[in-house]
Structure formats: structure tokens, C-alpha cells
Image (cartoon, rainbow, N blue to C red; front, top):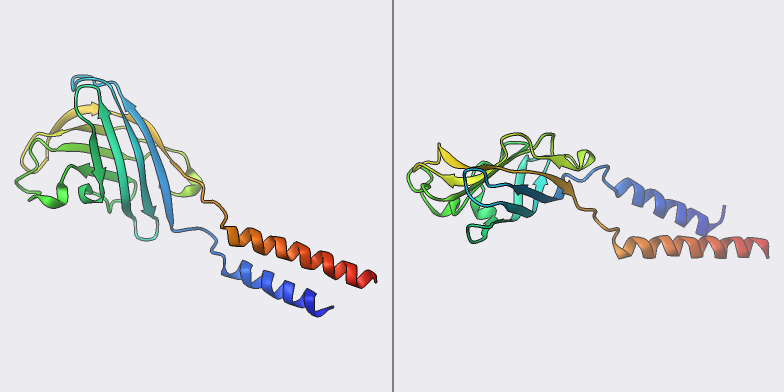
Length: 184
């Protein structure tokens, strides 16, 4: 066994040992729609969020709701009101900026329970019954009015880093050089 072969084998073993089996954090894309019902015009829900399966936590929320009868609503991390329950994401406009016990009346509400665990292996995951867009109808938002939404969330693929492609190319070149040297 040549020194080059040993180095390549050791490098490959270290790379495989360092690679995690699954990522705890995954980025999800949301696409949904609603017909308005008694709430008003039809509309769409789209955007993304990240979910950490180890911590059961949502973050980097960027979701937009466009209703034909209202101006667009934008939801972010500041709006997470129920974000630590696995499989449920509740967003209330300006939630972290107001007193949640007395100042939520009239705020936009987006509630998205998911039909399965937010595990990348389950992608895409449908929104479960009860997914909802509307407005809080009480000071602490224990009642609301709005419409059901229907759609899915799916994991976005994470591209292989450029360094990995360079490493794989180098392995091929070293392998070719090693075979050429052995034949000589």
C-alpha cells in the first residue's frame, strides 16, 4: 500500500466520520392558498422558515400572506406566538412588541398545524385541518375570525459545498496518478 493510498483512505475516513447523519435544522418552504369564505377574498400564503428538530423551535420566519381584499401581511420571528410546540406554527402580527394579554385585538393571525412531524424525511408535509388565516377578535386572541388555508411545506435542498466537489476531484486525480505510477 503506497503512502498516497494511505493518505487518501485516512482523509476519506475522516470526512465520513465527521459528516452528521441528519441535520437538526432544516429550511422549509410554505405554499398555501385560501378561498376567503366569510372572511373576504381569496389569497395565498408563501415564504419560508427554519425548524430545529432537536430543540423543537422555529426561527428565520419569513412568510407573506396576500389577500385580494387587504394589503399584504408579512410575518417574521417577531410574530411567533406558539413556536415551541412541535408541528404547529402560530404567528400573530407584532406579537413580541405588544402585551399578549391585552393588545392583540385586530392583529393578523396565521396558524399552521402540520399533518406530520417537520422531519426532512417526511417532506413535503401538508397543512393539517384547522390551518387558518384571520384576525384576532379579542384582547388576548383567544377567539379569531378568518378562513381555512390549504397547502404544504417542503424542505429546500441544501447544495453540496464547493469544497466537497474540490475534495472529490482531488481524490480522483490522486487515484489516477497513483495507478499511473504503479503501472510504470
